[in-house]
Amino acid sequence: MHGLWSSGASDKNKAMVEQLQRYGVIKSSKVAEVMETIDRGLFVPQGGSPYFDSPMAIGYNATISAPHMHAACLELLEDHLQPGMRALDVGSGTGYLTACFALMVGPGGRAVGVEHIPELVASSAENIKKSAAAPQLNDGSLSIHIADGREGWPELAPYDCIHVGAAAPQIPEALIEQLKPGGRMVIPVGTIFQELKVVDKKLDGGVSIRDETSVRYVPLTSKDAQLHSN
Ligand code: SAH
Image (cartoon, rainbow, N blue to C red; front, side, top):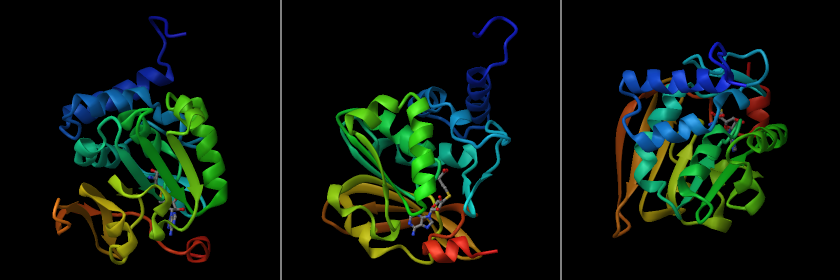
């Protein structure tokens, strides 16, 4: 399939990862390996440009984040995505990052996606089934649930890693509670102006919060507000 002259999807995905490495967004070889293994092209709807460094519309007033944001979040969370660990992806959308988390924590860990649009949950499962994370959907170490992510997913708490893919007006208390001591959450916070916050829960339960960078995400909100925004 990948002859000398082909420019197949996996070649383009690899070129995207190499560019992110050249720009210094990806420093970790593990993050590069995972982003090479999970083909982003399987997660972007037909007609989009999956390997272009930009967010893309996925319907329902949602977007798949740009590759450099996915890479930046994986870099920030890598130490909390070690084999056997538990990861929660709030606003899992296309399922791309949940699939990356699953690969990192492995079959002995848990990668849990929570998304409030049922159609996106269904299509994300289809995307994942085509990807290298498919076996983990079968063995149960990867699951995606229809729920309001502002409540987290208490059934499998506490989590070593929580990623929030939509911007909250403030950090939901339930998510701080569901973070394991020693764990880390990455969450965009704000309305018009947003900061990507890194929340570390110390072993004594204390919490430290710092701003990583300015970002622009869709809001973490109610399903009705999301579907009727415009
Ligand atoms: N990480 C995803 C981001 C998708 S955009 C990706 O790259 O594919 C943000 C997602 O958050 C949307 O799919 C939106 O439907 C979802 N979302 C917004 N508010 C939510 C809430 N309260 N609970 C669950 N999901 C929510």
